[in-house]
Length: 212
Image (cartoon, rainbow, N blue to C red):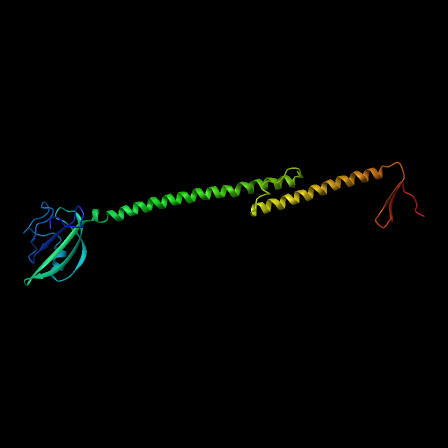
């Protein structure tokens, strides 16, 4: 009884009689001793009635405990067998596990936040750069290449589409300049010139003449 196995540093086992007095020495004599009034009288009463269970209790020194109890009969005398352990030691593994879970969850959450920030930056930076290129194209700046056009993802697809648009607009602008230049040269020519289409139909004459 004084060295119970599996009850840690604060657990103890004792036997009480129907009169509520201890019939065994306790592990902690300073709280109770043999033939002294047993603590946890509720548990003793239920055990003497034949019940078995686990309840919260308090030792004589006021320390909260969990008490397991059962009743048994020996030589036609009813006895109560009790085992208790302080709540602090009993729930220490659960408290340690809770702290470990809180720590692990906190580490995981921090990791998720950091990954989310990195992913957000990895997505937002290309989008901001492409948005800047869109403004350049809209302002007729067709010389600057579009960034991220070589990426093989959705951002790359958007950038490549914008690059194609920039190239098309650049070619159209060059054609317009060429057309305007040729038109100015044709209109300002001092020698006779004729403009024909593919069917060799005359479309314009410089200087204007009457076609016969």
